[in-house]
Each structure stands twice: as structure tokens, then as C-alpha cells.
Amino acid sequence: MKIAVGCDHAGFVLKSAVLEYLKGRAEVLDHGTFSGDRVDYPDIAFKVGRSVSQGEADRGVLLCGTGIGMAIAANKIKGIRAATCNDPELASLSRAHNDLNVLAMGGRVIEPAQVAPILDAWFSTPFEGGRHLIRLDKIAACEASAFNVHFSSVGSVMVLHHPLIQHKMGIIRDKKTTVKEFRELVQELAGLMVYEITRNLPLTEIEVETPLAVTKAFTLSGKKLAVVPVLRAGLGMVDGILQLIPNAKVGHIGLYRDPETLEPVEYYCKLPPDVGEREIFVLDPMLATGGSATAALSLIKDRGAEKISLVSLIAAPEGVNRVQAEHPDVDIFIAALDTHLNEHGYIMPGLGDAGDRLFGTK
Ligand code: RB5
Image (cartoon, protein in one colour):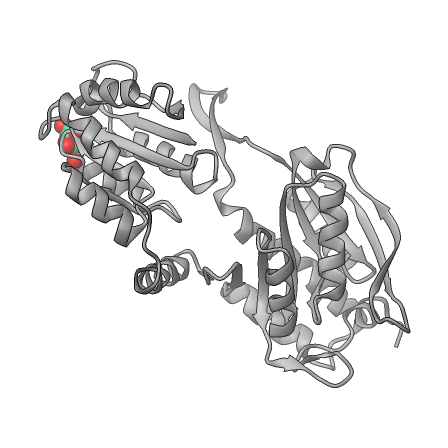
């Protein structure tokens, strides 16, 4: 287990007790602070929160004067459930009922000797699930709307509700939209969607010299990106994303549907060689039955990819269910969840055949 730990000056002494406790029990990511000098607790809380939110650490422990400020700040990070637990009973209940993933304690409230029983309780108590999960889902849904996405904890399906995305979706659905407009809109939509999806990419602080002074700035850190369009309609989304992330590598997957078995068959697959070290966005504008998407995801995983998201403009519930059943680890990002598939396998109301509308083949 990996634990992210952080403190401010008022939690500095308590942090030593936490690190001592974790020795031999867990791998520690120490986010500071590293002396008793005054620092602002939110800076540390955000680092630990992001570490947990992004999966770098399994859980986090934060120490400040009371534990309160750290918990408030950490709770601003997506997916964080932080609370102050200055006694073992609270720590135990926080796991059982709240699935607490960041524990905060106060160096001005408890003694270093009290840390071990609190952490014992926190680590040994499992989440009870059931009615508590329903409540956490409600919190997650509220949080997701604050991040302008809709979220379900049954797998991860996020409908991106940004007004520009929804406006453009209205235009591409219109049968009167021309091939030229359709093509441009798919690019724009893909770019806007990826802009939303990447809002939590990890950053590293750097120093840059402006013409006037040296200042702190940020640079992207963490996994590099790759986009993998599923041929042929996925191609329509690539350039819109590359405009924002020009260094992303591009792989391609070609699948056709066997007319007898109706199952997807691979006819082309070329991926970046370092696919395992990249965060992959699989692009397929229409998630209908989920047949091609699940096959594409399996192919990419077979070649070593680990962190994969599926980006589609429109999905049918049938497709979402199939992807979630076969690839529960894959996040699905869509601009609209439509009602059903018709007898020909088209998403209803949908927008017709995205490939034909992109390439003018009908
Ligand atoms: C720092 O003096 C103190 O305000 C901080 O450690 C914490 O207790 C805030 O909640």
C-alpha cells in the first residue's frame, strides 16, 4: 500500500510519528513540509489530495494544528473524502461509513503517542458498503456536477455538460449539417472534450525567467498521452485533440464486423511502442453495441496499455453497459447518453452513421 503524507509546521512533530508508524507497513510518499518553518496548509493538502486522486497513492494522511484546515482543503480535490479524526473511534467509523481516503490529525490536539491507535483503527476497518455506498454516490454525483461532469460510481461514465459541447452536439445531430461542418464540429468537440477530461493532469512546479523576473510556473508531469482512433470514424476526432496536445502519439486500430458472427475482427493495429507508459484515449464517436470498443480496448491492453479512457460523442446504454462489464477499469467520457439502439444497431436519436457523415460516403 502507498500512503501520501503531508503536514504544515503545526503538524510537523506528528508527521514524524506517522512516518515511524508507516515504516515497514507501507510505502510512503512524503509531500513535506520538511522543517518546522511556517507554510500554508492548503499547499500541502492539495499535493496529498492530488496524489490520492490520481492513483499515485492509495490513501493520504495529513497533519496540521487541528486537522481541520487540512481536511477542508483536501476535500476540494476530486475524489477525496477527508476528515479530521483525532481519536480511534472516529477513524474506525470514517472507514466503515465514509470510506475515508484521507485522514487528518491535529498536532495541537493530540500527542504523537496517540497516532498509532488512530492509524491502527483506520487501516484495520473495512468500508461497509451497502447503504453507505448509496450515500457516497450522492456525494460523488454532487462533486461531479461541480466539476461539470456527471459521474456514476458503477464504472466511470462521465457526460460532459459544458455548454459549448452541448451547443455543438445540437448542430452535429441535425441532418441538415453539411459534411464540411460535421467534420469541423467533430474536431472541435473532440478538443473541447479532451480539454475537460485533462483538467486534473498532474503538474510540476518549475521556474521560468520572464523578460522581467524569475517566477514560478507549471509544466505537465506524469504519463505521456496517446490517442488511438478506431477506424474509420475515430479519425475525425484526432486533429482536434492534437491541436491541444501536439506531442501526443497516435495509434490506429481497424476493426470490421464479421457478417456471420457479427463480432469485430481486427484488420489493422499500429500503436506507439511505449503504449504501457502512456495514458491512452481511445476515440470512437459512437458507442453503440460496444462490440468494436470492447475489442479495441482488449487489443490495446494485450499490447501492454494500462491506463485507458474511451472518448465518444454519443453512447447508447447498451454500449456503456458492455464496456463497463468487460472493462470496468476504463473511464468512459461522452457528450451525450442517448436512449437506445434501433433494430439496425443505430443509436437513437443519435446522429446517423458518423463515418458516412464525416467522409461524405452516403
Ligand atoms: C496553523 O497555525 C494552523 O492554522 C493550521 O495548522 C491548522 O490548524 C489549520 O486548520
